[in-house]
Amino acid sequence: MNIGIISDTHGNWSSIDDVVSRAQKMDMWLHCGDCVPDAEYLQELVSVPVYGVAGNCDWPTGQTCYERIIDAAGHKIFLTHGHNYGVRYTTEYIMEAAESQGADIAIFGHTHVVEYAPGSPLVLNPGSASRPRDERQGSFMIMELSENVAPKVTVIRI
Image 1: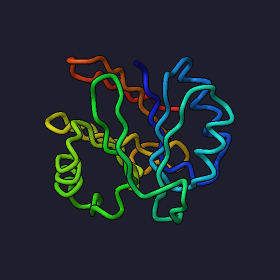
Image 2: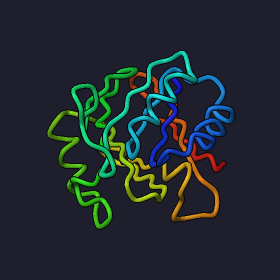
Image 3: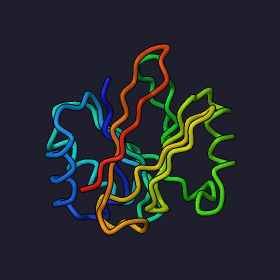
Image 4: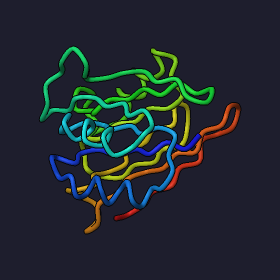
């Protein structure tokens, strides 16, 4: 299963267009927040499920919350924006939250900086597709998931 992971698009739909054109065929998309309508726009572009969360620049609604659990290919993914877990300073709290919900993968945004921290749980941040703080180019991730196999993660700069 191929999962596209994107975050912090902040209303820049052309960056979402770029990501989708670069990603090709995904089985699912995850949007880590900061502009809930961007996840809705992404859903209009693709014919696979898109799961999003609200970020610090959003507000949760009955359909969008600050965090969620997604079951995929034998893995449990904890998806959140990260601002409620102090991710600018440490990933300790997001790891604890993921573990408490039985997730083996924690995915967040907020910092606009790519992060890949193997371990249990695996911790991922795709950076920002439109406003990166770690490079000049935006970024997203593709995660290949298979049951009973460690995830394979690729960072793509756009």
